[in-house]
Image (tube, rainbow, N blue to C red; front, side, top):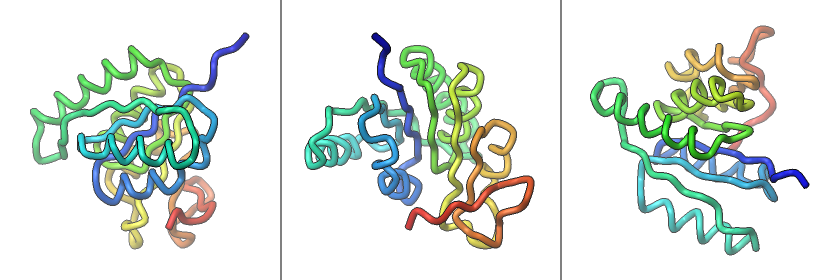
Length: 160
């Protein structure tokens, strides 16, 4: 008997989280753990799972951080290492910002398949995290057709 595929779905709170929630049907039936920076989103995850008749997903809270708060970034990275070591996901999916970038890099180190979906808000150019994610993403996506290039990111449609 094989264990279910483990997915780690990671996004910072706000628009990145909204976009992550919109692609939830992609991992229906898999063992999912959500990772974010806002404890209030736990109830959202539980309510959505109940409404869809799914098993209760995992939820992990990490420190909110960005490139202007270096100490918090280090803490966030450490927290993600702990999450990754405990859960050993098969796949890491993220819509971005700092926790998504770290999760992608760590996921690759832990042998997980990785997916980066750049934020819909980045219509003129890829986000800084999205640009850096290129080397660590097995699937690197943009939500804007005109930002796609033959070398990536790919455009397969938009989340919104």
